[in-house]
Length: 265
Image 1: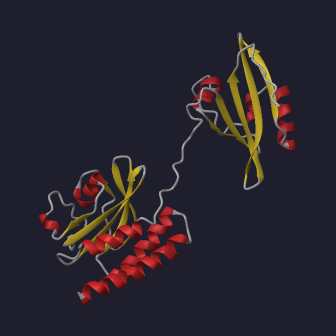
Image 2 (image 1 turned 120 degrees about the vertical axis):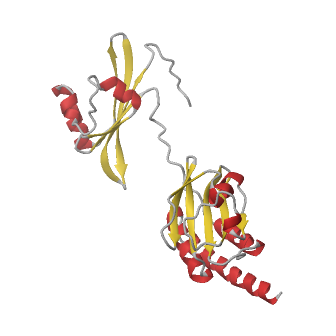
Image 3 (image 1 turned 135 degrees about the horizontal axis):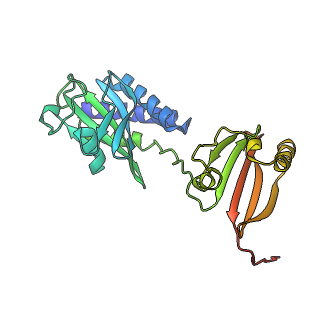
């Protein structure tokens, strides 16, 4: 009983330290790195680290210990099983676990904690010990509380990639930085990418002069054009990085010849 109380006291201290570490930073990788270091220093186990979910594979993340497996498939080994089941897996003897992946031959027992949110599992915490029967429900209880402090980084979504209008981005020197699929289809005629080219080379001189004026003034520009029976709205606006002018974004979209117009109060 005394040993159990001491373990709980130790974990309570670790939990408060983890809370202080993670509250100071919202970067997932940084927090995983610090938490792995804290657990390694205090628990002294063979290997402590994280794997992050990418598609149908776990990818090695921050860890403390010897060289590790870099990829683990869903449902494979202890880590893949914990991910697939979305539940803690405690293995008293790794040699008795079907399909155990021996990243380190010195490992004798293991515990894996899935880390999840409303979207599902996004990582796992993996801890290996050189001793048999190292882990129990007390470890699971407190380790779950610690990993619950970790938050998934917002997914980066390219909302404009498949948009039904052309989006073209250039820098302050009129060099094309990015084009969505519609922009490529509209402006690339010979199959050769024009990313990295100058907008001045893609426009007649009159339009190039207008572009130079916009780059100097940082003004917004909007107009309509008609070609081959198709009417388009062209909208060009500056974009900024850290408050500094960084270039222009152009939207080019087909519009009907007759459009409703509403005046709202």
